[in-house]
Amino acid sequence: MKNFKICLLGLLILIFSANNSIAKDQQLISKFEQANEFYNQAVYDSALMLYNAVMDEGYASDALYYNTANTYFKLKEIPSAIVYYEKALKINPSDEDILHNLNIANSMIIDKIEDIPQLFFRVWWNTFYTMLPADTWAWISVIIFMLTLVSAYVYFTVYNVGLRKISFFLGLLLLFFSIASFGLASQKYYYTQQTNEAIVFIPTITVKSSPTASSVDLFVLHEGTKVTLLDHAGGWQKIRIANGSVGWLPDEVLTGI
Image (tube, rainbow, N blue to C red; front, side, top):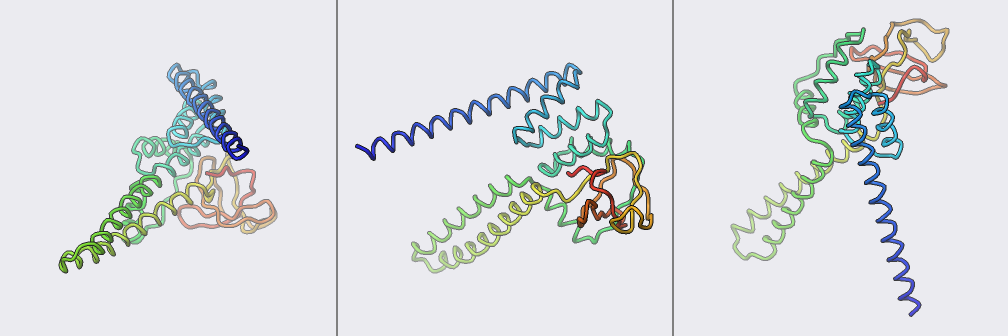
């Protein structure tokens, strides 16, 4: 009887927690939809307040970031818009609307920095890598692994030699693709969780040769420019821009993506 009561209490706690979680999700969805209505009515300040409230609850999605970016764009806060377009793109790198709006926002900033030309195989890999979001690669990995198990079942249960050979080599091939797709999903998820890029959030800033204000001036950047974060030391970030130039900037002038 005591064990039964403990199990019943645990079940009630689980049901209560699930109901609270569902209620919280519904509240977030309601806030998100209300924010969309404010945006459609051109009440951008109110829309932004609700989008930020949803994000403050720990929710993240490409749609939320994209809508937030559009709101900042309407408010003419271009650096903030670029930050959230980039965040949305990290989650869903193949979305044409995000790419289009990000390109428009980038066309409105001062710095026009040319990317370093990449080797052809690197371009191919980036195209393949950005083809699908992390959760899609994860589902692909699961499906391929299930097919691998089917091949293994055929190999161990069928007596036909030719069919066993086919199932064996097919199973090895499927196992390879399952591991590869799982690796892609893991890498993309890790990438979305890391802050290894940032946007400059000050009208004009001089990049330094070392992490001190008295060091040599290297070049000037303007707000909205995207940089890659390489290292951190004493309130300074070592950064690299698209053309390969490297230098140091204070933490406070950067907002991570």
